[in-house]
Amino acid sequence: MAIPEETFFLPPDAEGTLQKQIQQLVAEAILSGRFRPGEKMPSSRKLAKHLSVSRITVTLAYTELLADDYLTSLGRSGYYISKNAPQPPKFAITPREDKVDWNRAIGQKFSGGVSLTKPQDWGKYKYPFIYGQADETLFDRSNWRLCALQALGSKDYDALTSDYFDRDDPKLIEFILRHTLPRRGIKADPDEVLVTMGAQNALWLSANVLLNQRRTAALENPCYPSLRDILTQSRCQVASVEVDSSGLPPDALPADVDVVFTTPSHQCPTATTMPLERRQALLQQASEKDFLIVEDDYEFEMSFLKAPSPALKSLDREGRVIYVGSFSKSLFPGLRLGYLVGSKHFIREARALRSTVLRHPPGHIQRTAAYFLSLGHYDALIRRMGTAFHERRLAMEDAFLQHGLAVAGQGAFGGSSFWMRASARVDTEEVAERLRGKGVLIEPGRPFFTTEEAPKNYYRLAYSSLRMDKIADGVALIASEMHEP
Image (cartoon, rainbow, N blue to C red; front, side, top):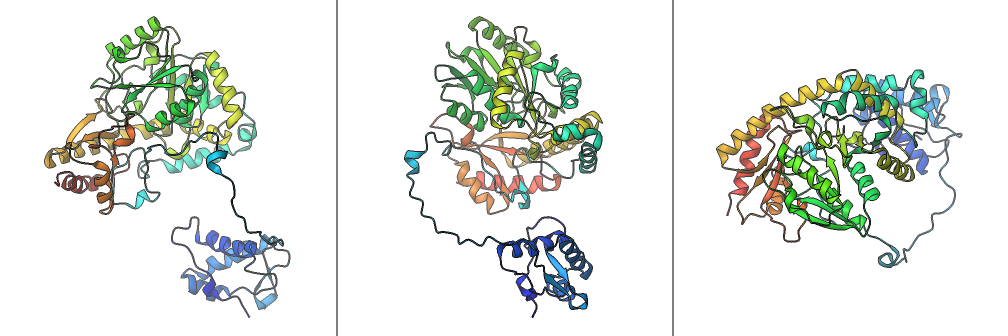
């Protein structure tokens, strides 16, 4: 008697082709012990009808399972679970009772912070005004796939398999040195660049190399929430500095500061840009008071209104600025590829710290990115994103004007979001929860602030993954909730 076809079902959120999904269903059932050697599989016709797929799809799945020795075929009798199929463990699983006092056992806690969250299924929401998510209609998926295949070729075997703990992909480093950094006015040598797992990893490396319990770090308020968590975990002294319409004010820095973390191109989250005079004043103070600056060159690529200001690092004549760049935001968040630029003495220590934690970013990812960048696909993508973002920005501004929403901060050069302010009596976390039920996602502003008494009436609206035809209706829904008493 065959295994009933009713025991098979395809989850609606399953990934891969139908053929692969069916293969996975059978393999998992065998590995879990539900299907045993010698049991007969349902016929391809019956299973195809039950799953509402074509019969050839089931036949191909069975053929692959046959080749992997999960199934065996007995002439016209059909398919059976192979006697050579992997067997589930034969030992009994002993029930476990956790008797550890984890409050005492954990030496240092990393959870419990106020951080940004978004639903895992954010893409299913009708109006996702959330930051940093990729738009699949803009991304050049076909050329990325070709670059990934090229990086798998025999010519690039070393890049795919080498242990890069003491160096990085030479093609990627060359592109960063010859193309990316010169656009920011920065000149560097190969031993002054380190590839990281995104900008956040670069900030973590910087904080752990430069800070200890006796040193003081200054960060902007409001700020990038993960940076606040990084500095808290480093156990250094943290000084919060209120930003104004021109970003971080140098005169407000504490006298004993050792490292200043700043986002001068597009301040996070207000998107304001630090003017040239203030950048020079910050560097002058760094020289006089002998502190270092970590510059997160946040969203400089998204300067579609006018050319971006020169990077702080490009104005530095004393080696005091450590530069953080990233390809993750402009390509796609899951890429996790960024870089640090600084003195070779700093990079040496950062590389040593990186090697103790993750050795290096995967070689295949580095080489794929190097091809995508060097073949011009990246520049084409940035131009395409700039055009789309500009159109969405104008549509957002029109909708704000129509519905009376107040913009607290917006990038003079472009960017992909607006920093918004509601009336003082509005709690945007409560509003965000109500909007979520209407298919609208926004980012409440409280997690961005460093103080305990953070204002509750700020919020961020991004448009990186939002379709043009959704903007007007989405803003109207937001306005209806923000204006409610």
